[in-house]
Image 1 (cartoon, helix red, strand yellow):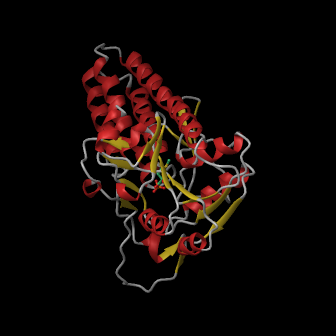
Image 2: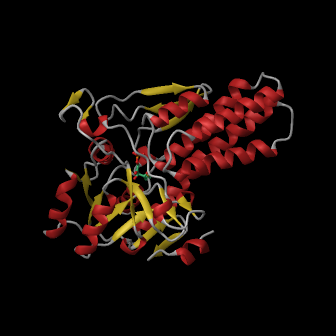
Amino acid sequence: MTVETLRWRNNQLEMIDQRCLPAIIQFLSYSDAQTVAEGIQQMVVRGAPAIGVAAAYGIALEAQKCATLPREKFAEQMVQAFDVLAASRPTAVNLFWALNRMRDRFSVSSTNDNVFVARLLLEEAHAIYHEDIETNKKMGAFGASILDDGMCILTHCNAGALATAGHGTALGVIRSAVAEGKKITVFADETRPFLQGARLTAWELSEDGIDTTLITDNMAGHFMKIGTIDAVIVGTDRVSANGDVANKIGTYMVAVLAKEHDIPFYVACPLSTIDLSISSGDDIPIEERSSNEVTGYRDVRWAPENVKVRNPSFDVTPARLITALITEQGIVHAPNEKKLKALF
Ligand code: MRU
């Protein structure tokens, strides 16, 4: 995969504009926390780990921008930066995980030298970026070990390089299996309404030469029933302590279908996505996005004016429907609270 999701260039963060993919490949530049938060909210960058990495850079950028201010004013600006980034999207816990890491780094730096603090924060953001790629490669290796040569995998949304700093979570497992010489084919759900499957998954896998077939979301049951699909692998935005999984809207439907057809349902899940502070999936905050995403696409509207619309961006799949979590520490079969706690 040659396309980068985020990169640090000339003391700025550059992010590929995922709203325009695959038609246009363009990078947008960011130099403070407010604009990074807007980039996250508007889906320039999306996918749980990528959002976390972007937020970490948002903090580093703000520190760099405000470094010449008096210490008290600097600290005030930084508090606002943490707040604005935390308010950008509610469901993916990686955002809060990354901000907590940056906050820890910020609070232990007791010096009055803002420039030094800004440097520490940038180092931490770089560390989060590089660790994410390493984590995905470890998950990829564990996940590849449970895939057989010749398997056809169903995916939902985009849990690929574009959803992370690189390699991907669910797509990282597929990439690693292919790198081991296994012939893996992919069926990619298009993922209404934002079309991450059609625009991003189908694109990044095809760029890598991985045999990919695009289907609409309502075709998944059909292809399971006629025996095309051997396993499902998805990513996740937040896993509660009991193993319930929040992921892109429609994931729950796919998990129910997989159970009905006795197809294994795997979730690629870095430890940074596990939220032990939330006991069950019922308490995971679910983002509700603009009705425009449902009533049409880009400039085209097909729904009648004034129609009532709901647009929850995520749903929760109960742990009982999950065959295993694939983590960087190994495979967790039939996840439950005891097994998740043991990972930490
Ligand atoms: O709304 P998005 O595009 O940010 O949603 C992304 C997903 O639901 C992904 O499946 C999830 O973040 C896992 S990405 C490794």
